[in-house]
Amino acid sequence: MDAEAKRAVLVLTLNLRDEGNEAKRVFHPSLPEVRAEPNPEPRFLLPTAPRPAPAGTPTPPLLPHFRIPLRPPGSTSGPRYRKLRPGAVERQPWVPSGAESSGAWLWSCREMLLKPHSRVQVFEGAEDNLPDRDALRAAVAIRQLAEGLTADDLLLVLISGGGSALLPAPIPPVTLEEKQTLTKLLAARGANIQELNTIRKALSQLKGGGLAQAAYPAQVVSLILSDVVGDPVEVIASGPTVASVHSVQDCLHILNHYGLRAALPRSVKTVLAQSDSDPHGPHSCGHVLNVIIGSNALALAEAQRQAEALGYRAVVLSAAIQGDVKSVARFYGLLTRVAGAHLTLPVTGASVEEEAQLWELAAELQLPDLQLKEALEAVAGAGGPVCLLAGGEPTVQLQGSGKGGRNQELALRVGAELGQQPLGPLEVLFLSGGTDGQDGPTEAAGAWVVPELTSQAATEGLDVAAFLSRNDSHTFFRCFRGGAHLLHTGLTGTNVMDAHLLFLRPR
Image (tube, rainbow, N blue to C red; front, top):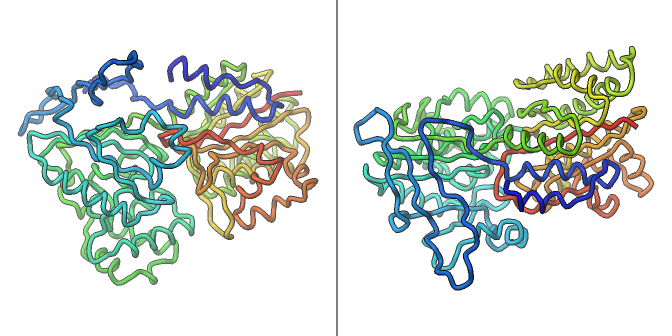
């Protein structure tokens, strides 16, 4: 994030009591913070954004010279490098439906729009993050491009969240509509991203390494923004350049778990019956280099630096928060009370009991990188304001027909948890936001709450429990205080899952 961008973000005023602005100042810098982890071999020499040219200056080529590691055909030794010329590159990105024409995209990502006479051909599709006919046409074009490559070519693949819906190519006789219906049913019953993508790969010609196989013998370099807990490259966008390691039995286990196996269309049963553990060919993709260039951990690290600059003792709890949103909200409610007791009072009998409940719930959520012990120790020694950070992707099991997203639902549920009992001499604010800038089918990235939420809502005639029963969190936040608790960032052009920020300040 350059200095000018940081200055633009940091023009907000500072105070936990000042309508959540301090929380927003911590959240915003994390959005564009996606960069490769240090990795000495191979080295990537990628172009940096040029400064604006003076008026009248000829427009430079869209793609400057840069070098990509390539190995000689038939060689398994270290990389060689080839300089690419702009005229030698053919690009076919595919983006969410409506992205180029939407006001939010034009405002927040205008620098990403195509320049006049660009060589880039854009395909739009996957409205509401679901595969559709437009995405299918894009997938066909991408596959044709890949299949036409030779051993002298390099396929550069840029992968980010939403890639699964943007690259649908069902294995016949499965139709796009059948695959779309199955995806909707799994998502509605609470399937996580790993489970969804396991099924998608089993029914796809391009996922699970299919795109890489189509490009062989060309060499493939994939630059990946991770929107999946743990950054497994085989799961992100259903791994179009990573050979599948899942078996048919894995798929059947998922379908059985969500009660969908008996309702499968005959075509899906046929494809699964014909598949083995690796339906896309060789287990090894030796012609592919997959590189994670952005992740939730990187976003949280940047938010942590910002919180520390604002005077908080900042601790990252986990970059792998997942599980049912109700349990996650309960976890944050207990965490607030336990951390608050460590921060403001000697540990009492009641807080010891709640701390035991917190540890028990953490074990149930199975968070592999949870730094709970370290966080509580840091809080106890802070003596001042604390910011606890976490990230990941909880799931919502739909029970009603309301409008919302997992971040707004989580924030509303945490607000309800915080209001259940007094928290003592402590100011608390919780924020949950999606790093892509869009939470579900809404224009908000998320929302923020305080312990007084439930009582304040009641004075406006708003029943928090009723909105939660309908999964109608966005409608609630839009009505509550005129939408002041909604988090609006605009589309960010990236997606590394969600960020959860818990602020605690002794009075």
